[in-house]
Image (cartoon, rainbow, N blue to C red; front, side, top):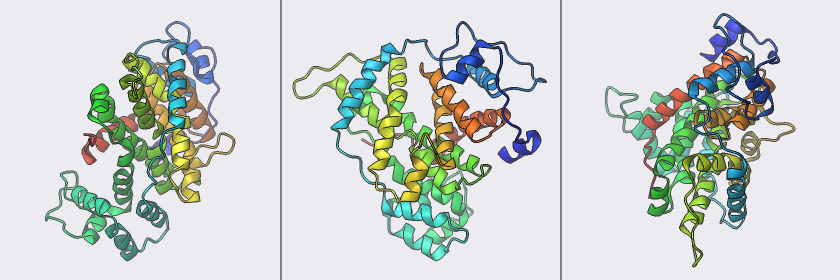
Length: 356
């Protein structure tokens, strides 16, 4: 789909937006005054900022308008609490090796089967997915070799990353789950949707590597579950310290989106990833790799689709990443639609019920 859009509309420089207040706000990542700009007719060429304004208008804008002061103090408390949190588990070595192997032009099937067989969770996940209704094999698949041959390398990497990344989205206690049931049930699906969308986009971006971009997409929001655990600790209280009042849904979403990038960067740095994978996952603001920039783009699109009160900052990130990647507005609009579909696909491929 992305290749068709590129062929149809080419790679002309993104037009700079003009008059509309919403467009100017999107350029700076700030909330527009009033209702935003007028809708552009279907026959008129869209600038990137006009397209983003239309997408946000179609979503209904942020779920509620809030002043940043309403979540900034809570965000600082979570950041302070996270400093003393124990480091997350390292990313499974076998999963990293599989991603590295899959990035080679000629993948050795015997070596791939050997790697997969070393991790029971990954092996069982591949067999489960290969026999699922999504692939509907004519006969039951019982060997890893047959499962890998049927799924293909792309789907194998998706399953491997989903299995390995799931541990970062597990719920530590029932109390945490009861505080934020919907968030915990959807957060992992959204992370996998980021991975799927990033992997597809990598096919159309020069110097991007699909397997690495899949991992970068998976981990771009890994700070969100860490932040949610810290928020739960603040609400529940500990060691005789009374908990805080549970914030509104809007404040929770804005707070998570505010602190997630910094927390995620720390988490990824502690995972022990090989250098080539770490550079794909950590966004260097000065010289980001194409893989990291793609992940940043799809992660920001996800924040817009969640309708967080911090939506305008996320829109500014989409604009900056898309311009850096030289993506046309209609190309980015297609990515919005693709990511929505990928959330559904992720929920179908992986169980959306968090572990207890």
